[in-house]
Length: 243
Ligand code: 13P
Image 1 (cartoon, rainbow, N blue to C red):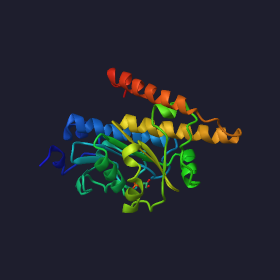
Image 2 (cartoon, rainbow, N blue to C red):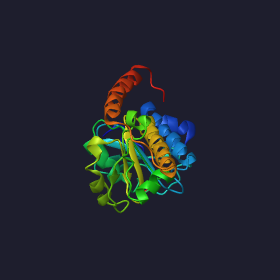
Image 3 (cartoon, rainbow, N blue to C red):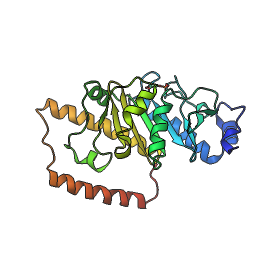
């Protein structure tokens, strides 16, 4: 029995909710609420689109429920599943895309959080069968890395994780053909910022194309950026968290 499996009567929110969950679980529930609102406010998850999850421990995942607006979620709406996707706690059903999230957690032990969204420009690239893989901006090379395109797969089925598997080990952001974007990282703020960065990069790629085509970075500058990326990450990890 884990401490996460004990919630039979889940309070709706507020002080009752704080008493029901451990401080660390409550913090992660509130992060899912907060970043759900962010992705919705940015126009990345219209209607019930998108889903977010975090690791609670080595075997348990805390996820958004299926079929809900990411603008309207409460801490108590989140669902706990084991690493086979079996529901252990929650009033609602887990996201229909839980298989995709579990594939990432299984293949990437370093990943602590996942964000799936449908940001309009990045999704337009995915709808046109175009990866975001042209090395035309230093920022994306320094942070998220270039973004491949996984082949089309029917949403909510095992096809999605199968289409993603070749990309998961070496990428932190993947476009899903005719569907949307998946990003993951060391925390929910990290996964969220990668989503934001990819959508910004998609906007830059689109504008550059409209302006007549970008000039790609030179190979030797890409190598220098890779070294700069390692230094940037090291420096950023030294200070207190900015989330
Ligand atoms: P869920 O509501 O099941 O999380 O699905 C939303 C979605 O974006 C599917 O791709």
